[in-house]
Image 1 (cartoon, helix red, strand yellow):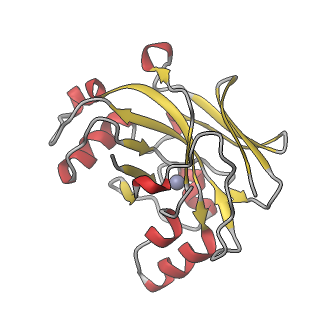
Image 2 (tube, rainbow, N blue to C red):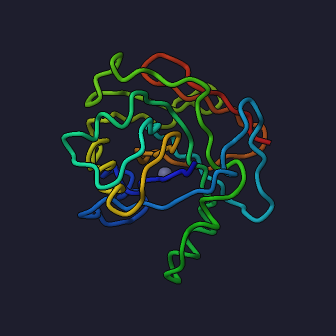
Length: 203
Ligand code: ZN
């Protein structure tokens, strides 16, 4: 399986990092080894002094497809989960300033936190999914799928022009504003609506 992540999909997050809004979805990959084993703590890697959380809605692909038409895109996923795209912001800024790829800052082991459970999309209003992240009991990020620049179906259609999507592939759909650093001892909890989707301890 592969992990595809969308960047700059929420206007206010793009602004907080000083980035322009893109006219087409911006995406990058994480390897499957980035998946954080369920229930494990997140260990801050020694190559970074500035690891940031980015809470994101996650689509799980349930059918193989290529060149997927937008009107059929909704048939390629049935569930939505929640994850964190952990980012070594210091490394990413260095890569960006030199015009280099981001993978070193985005794809390291444990950088893809994913919820244990996914929610059937029939139980959600896809255009109005509110989600949030708490750090040590206080809310640090709050977003809603209605604020996405590119919705789930548009993302699937766009990515499938370049990559065949396969069963089990995960698409992280971008983070709202409020990203910030973690330090050892922090506890993060992610929610879709009121439902707790995951918790992770930082070490
Ligand atoms: Zn992200």
